[in-house]
Each structure stands twice: as C-alpha cells, then as structure tokens.
Length: 416
Image (cartoon, rainbow, N blue to C red; front, top):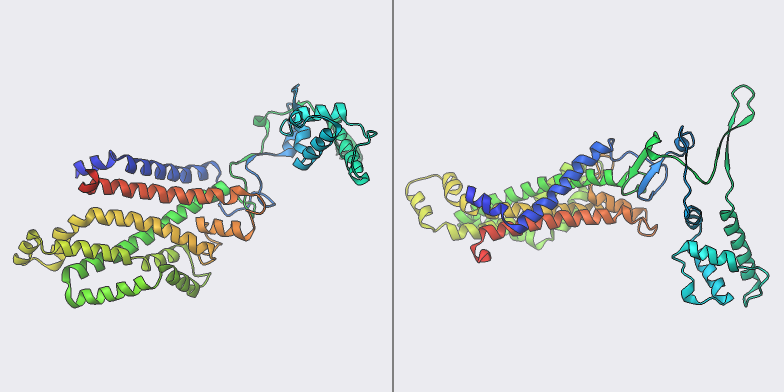
C-alpha cells in the first residue's frame, strides 16, 4: 500500500492534476471568506459591471485628506477615457486628409494624437468632404476642447438652517485621494453578471456545487456499475443475461436523452442539486458495469478464486476478498471519470434550463445559462462566461490528468 501510494505521488500527471484541483478548491474556500455574503445576492444595481476595483464616489468626495499630484499624462488619460474609438479614428482621418502621413498618426497613442489635433486642426481649412462631415468635425473639435479645458468642480451642500446651497469643497484636476482612506471599496476581480452579482463569488460557489453534484453522481453511478458488474461477471448465466439486457437497453438510449426526459418530468421546483446528482448517477452507470463485468470474468477462473470456492466461502466473501481487491484501482479510476462526466452532464442540463432550480445555489451550468439568456457574448461581457468555461475545462482536465497518472501507476504496460 505504501509503495503504491509512493508511486502515485511521484506520477507527474497525477501530481499536476492534483495541484490544479487543489488550487480550485482553495479558491472556493478563500474567496467567500474575503467577500462574505450569499453568492446570489446582488452587489450592484445594473448588469455586467467590468472587472476592477470600485470606490465609493460619495466617500471619495468626503475624504478628509486630499493630495495634490502633478502627473504629465493625467489630462491625456482623462481625455482618452472619454473619447471613443470612432472619435479617435475620425481624428486620424481628418489629419490624413490634411496631409499628414498615415504612419505619423497613431490612434493607440492618445497623447500624441491630441497634440497633432490641437496643433493642426482648423475648421476654416476646406478639405474634400461633405458639409455634414465638416460640421461633424467642428462638433468633435468642440468636444476635445471641452475635455482639455478642465474646470474645477464645486461641491455644494444645503445649509441645515437656511436651506441655501453653500460651497462645501472645490475639486481640481490635480486632487487625489488615497484608496486606503476610502471607507467603502469593493474589488470585483471578474466584475458582475446580468443580475449585478459578484461573478468570482458566484463562480466559487458554483464550482463547489458542481463538484458536489459530480461527486454524488459519480459515487452512485460507480456503486451501481460495480454491483451489477460484479454480480453479472461472477455469477454468469441467467443473472448475467438479465443484467446485460438492461445494460444494453441503457446503452442504446443516449444518457443525455434520459437525463432530459427525467429532469423535465421532475419539474423546476423539485430539482435541487442533490436531486439532479441522483438523476445523473442513475443514468450513467452503464459503461462502468460493462467494464467491471469484463474484469470479473477474467478473474473468476483464477486459482485463488477456485480455491476459495472449494473452501466453501460465501459469495460475498469471495467477491470482497478475492475479486474486489484486484479491480480496486480500476474502480477508483472509474470513479474519477464518472465525477468528471457528471460535472459535464450537469452543465449540459443547466444550459438547457433543466438543471437545479435557480433560487437555491448557482452551478457552473446555470451561470452559462444566465450568460446566454442575457446575451453576455453580445454585450462584450466576456467575464460572465469565459471564466466559467475555463473552470469547467480545468476541473475536467485535472481529473483526467489524475486518472491518467493512476493508469500509469497501476498498468505495467504503460509504465514500460
């Protein structure tokens, strides 16, 4: 046992898969501690907030300590944040028509582009363009001038006695506050989803739920397949024929079809995460049963099994002591594959709207379903679905690496 464990921990593939899986588990445990609260609670009033750090504007204005910083590119960055890509392309178009070479105008360097525009644009210059286009450039120039001519912001506050507005403070373009002095700061590494919920917090909870579903379904499917495979392979005859009849019946009918029909018949309100896991487990035992049966058939005529029969040992004892230990490694690998397959099956069901009910806990499939329903891909909200896809891929990849590593340890032919 110690030697097998030592070989397993020395397998590069098994270790890599185990590390990836452990890192995913660590994220699921630590992030809810850093950002407590229900993953289904909305933190924002709106949809698809971009990833980043969000600072309370109210607390920023009321900060006790204000610092003055003179940054050379501050104005250019401020203007660049308010000019769209179309505005920058239009500025470049006018400068090229004015006679500047194409390579000298770079829309990626807003500071240089603004300097070229400021030094060269003249609305009296008659270039070859329509009157509507000429008026567009006049409006664009006024917009740029308005952005460059920054004025101080005056914060007014009503007097509690008279009700008249009084100046509270003046904010200049060189005033800065330290983020550590702000009372309310929220970091959203993956932004928010269509419901204004923290995507990373939701993803941590969803991954844990999906892994739980995979574990329950995998255990159920492996136990059913192991029991039927042991009985059919060892007993043979009529028992084997009956077991293989049902196994072949489930083989002919695609498991996803059975999953859809059963999930649809249960109804949304009754479909909890555990219920979905049980349904997946009850419909995905077929290949485990067939594989275990094949292994047992090759073992039941071995000398040690025949000796146990002659000794008058019971069926249960023969299976538990003379057959099961020889296929234990195969059963463990089958369990890992069943878990990974169950996680994918849950994702498929949830994307079709047949997964666990949405009011309890999120799952990876439900997050993909929400992203599709609210057109995250059309809104450019990549953070609402790419991390989910990556998480599913990493879980599946980690489990399969672990399975391949175990296969190398237990299969002498692969080791050689």
